[in-house]
Length: 213
Image (cartoon, rainbow, N blue to C red; front, side):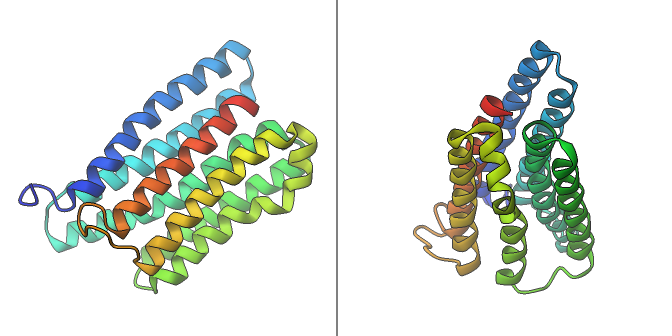
């Protein structure tokens, strides 16, 4: 299979993620349209689209067996979509749970960070893995600064789901940065484990957004 696909295990795991993201977007839009809430419609669409973009870009990058130049471009797009997903996940939280000036400022901050991160990735791609993984994690954990307003807006349950998603992403990020454990390289190595934890993180945040935003 490697003859046709570069990294089949990683690629197909995120193909599943892409398909689940489409289903997630449909369910989120159903809820938003039923509620006739424009904030939900806009923010849920952005969150769902960000998941689809991330998992689709990852699927294409890991499956396409092409020239080094093409693979390099796909890799840059793949890594850039992580910034899009992080900002996309913040969007429903900012526009529905927080709203007001705090939500708008936080939304502007995370999307500005995402834009800067994408530009940085495109032009300074060869920085150490530990460094750029740390940038993703720092951006993701900005939410700790609004824990109190989030608790006031929704109570403990949404914070539990939000924290669970953050922990899944963080564990995955640490595995990716350290390149360990590498149980069955190519099939269940550190990279494949990273992908699994990313899907679990997205699933946790999907539940949080569906139920509480």
